[in-house]
Length: 81
Image (cartoon, rainbow, N blue to C red; front, side, top):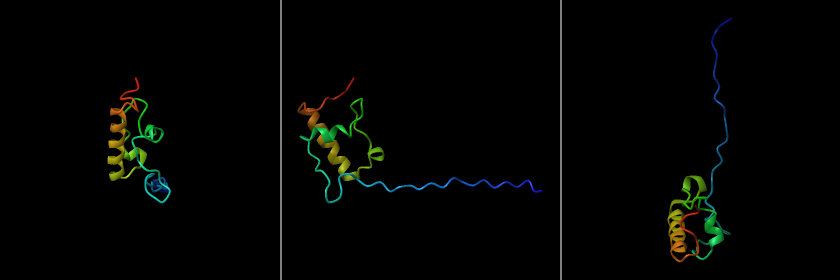
């Protein structure tokens, strides 16, 4: 008997993540739509990174601007402590 052992790497399917703001029926990013913006803010009040939310680069910049504008107009809190 040979003492060779082959280690097989576990195969997994990496699903391609699609930006929620691209496509035909995608919602528009607007600072007045607070219910949409709250989904992209953490429980501490920080803007979630695009690698977690799967938002594209250009839409992430637009989203950050809308969140900051909503905070400035007191539609959203700056920090949830």
